[in-house]
Length: 291
Image 1: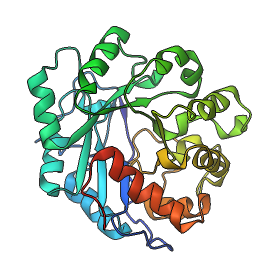
Image 2: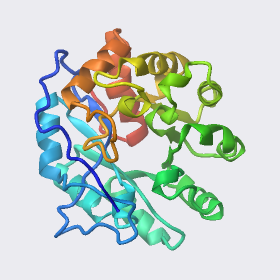
Image 3: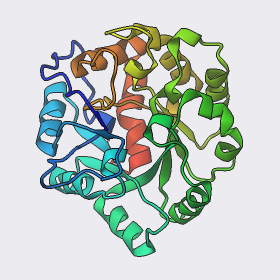
Image 4: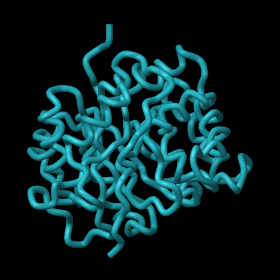
């Protein structure tokens, strides 16, 4: 079982101030393991990255809101995420992982706790595609709640599952720019498919995970053209996140302060920055309206 490296313990202070109520729309909490055990069938073991550490990072960066995404190492036990949302007193929303056994009562409890979506992993090193019958059944059930689905895909899966994605009836969010490979260029088929997908009014994308897209090392500037193209394609349906604490990074561990500044190199328009960091997540995740 793979063990993950810890995040950079010394995030720089970003050179750019974030707008009021800026949202980190993709972050995680892991453990503490003695209180929130990891799933026995997990494919990796992260270092503990508890709520207190996430809050300290967000305070340092100037992030006022966040979306805590359930990761596969905790499986369908969403307890650590729910605990963090509750302790955040409205600062955080969540995206859960559920299976075929989830009940309507459980979905209501999750909704009342601040969960606004479910996540499905298709990524090969995390176990590959889910049971597609379960996928379809869960999506039918969350539709009445007004939730969305987060799709964690490898780049080639954008092409492979085009028909599946095309029949989704709820808003769906593509994680990490579809994990496309920067070295394959802007004209690679998965990225062209992703850009075409963004014409669908239900499609959202996260311009995060630049370290996963990049072929190089910090500051991951070779991911910028991909992020810019996605922002241009659907500015009203783009989100940004740190992906802290960056599980399964095999290249350079990102510095979270540098990731904030990378966003400002991706997009220099203050109005568009506000849309990505405040207005779009506020709409999708049902945060209290900003003034």
